[in-house]
Length: 359
Image (cartoon, rainbow, N blue to C red; front, side, top):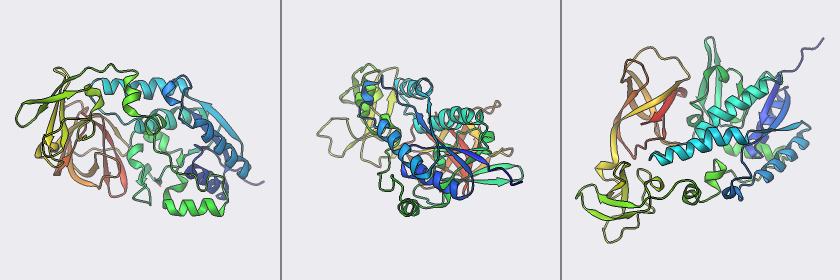
């Protein structure tokens, strides 16, 4: 009697990466089921331009081409509660969240994973550019082969036990190789442009979106050097550290950049010039730490990123408190625009150790 095929559910977004992921798994001998995750609510007026209907149609076309079933998992309510509401709450208190990371940890690799397991599958898979390495003690999350497309930064928040049931079929390829495979396989999405990240950020005006849920409270713009009031801001939620656009103060010579926000006094602090010393910091504090690889020895020397596609930065990390809730990150070189609400992610070589949220 032949051994039954291992069953895998692939999250199919309607993009080229997840399309090729499904095709590769078929070639590798898996029983493949496609799933389209519907996260966008039609009740959000600002999402009118969000092409989820087109994405679903593209996913269906690929499933038909591959002769695999495609199901739809509806996570609209959970997505609103766990990602969009969090997004607004962070902006309200002056931080700049990264919803892609939360979407991965709470939706794609939690809700989707749990629902997939209930169907009796062995693995879930997505089109992320990352790799899984299986070792004696469990699994490791590795950077994708294509360093320019590596998405491990967005995946650090996943429960490490979930990673044992995850496949990343495109992680061993470059983006150009995936495009070529899609064309060779004649997939309907072979020439579809890459998405611009989470739909409600990539497809709509962010300030317009925020303004529908956060009341604008104008206040003073102060030069962080002279301490003088030089203009008025439109509401602190609209600005992030290192930002140049939207300050709307002329006659200062060099361009102005956001360097700090005082939420209690409703003050926006700015400096002149893209590389003003006040824009740089050598240390940060992070919370909500998630370890993918158990750490026992501190301080620990790592490579770290404070934003996607940043080059690895040398750093030393250590816990600040006895409860191991706050982590200090000391960089060898000063880092520009360290932004509260964003994530710092740690590596040793290609192995993603984990990360946390910048405080």
